[in-house]
Image (cartoon, rainbow, N blue to C red; front, side, top):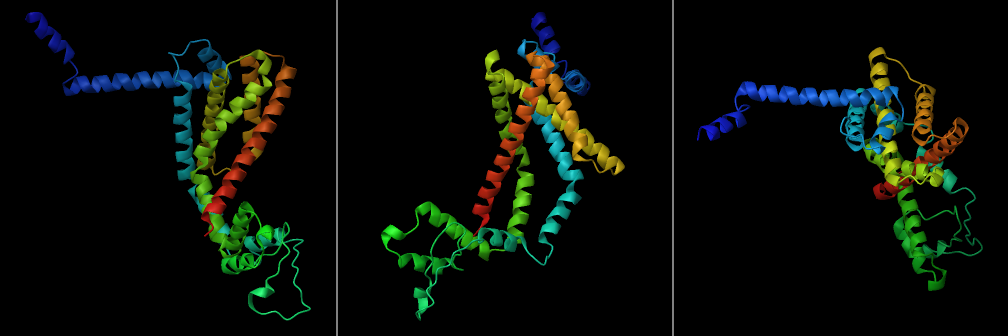
Length: 312
């Protein structure tokens, strides 16, 4: 009986306020120690954490997926808070009146070399006036109703396909819509969905590593770990640059951010994959170029889909 009572007392040692505070303080201290133990080599020793994790030395450090989410969340929160004025200024620039709107520019490009084949030798009334020879970059009717009516005048074998009709309708709706509002909504949506797009690009970068190191027979998981730690450093670096720029009102150029990241990536690849500097440099150029192209395609596809969805 006395043993049971003693055990109960030992188990309830943290039930009082002092014990709870002590437990919380010890937990927070332990978490901070692990975070500091992870962030220090992440900054000062490129590739070290990836190599440690792959070799099974994982308990001492924050797992890569948690580290990525933590740092990226901190960065985007600071980005939305500290860079809010720049975002608002960008949207105001889009909505500002101009002599030539963006819709006029896009419409001019889309309708360049348009071929409108109207027979002017005969008098026509009503819908018969809408005789178009459809080609890429052609002119279109001004309303969906006119377009539908024109389609009804065509025989079945002369009508455009379903996909082409869809994009032609979207073209007409876009010309009718307020392009400033559309692109303002696009910029706002792009900014708010930037974390998701960046997370989507993580496996793309890991796949590029798999391709350039295909002969080394590394598992995709190992490339994914390298990718997570690399992007954790990138977001941490962006966070520091954002804080310093905000504190001292500095305008940071693209080169100040871009070249240190490339240098970090070069050292990390050299340490983890252990190839010569020349091979590592060549593969760095390949990966960087392919990643920029892949990212541009992802943002372009996202922008086109968003525009098609928002046009009504």
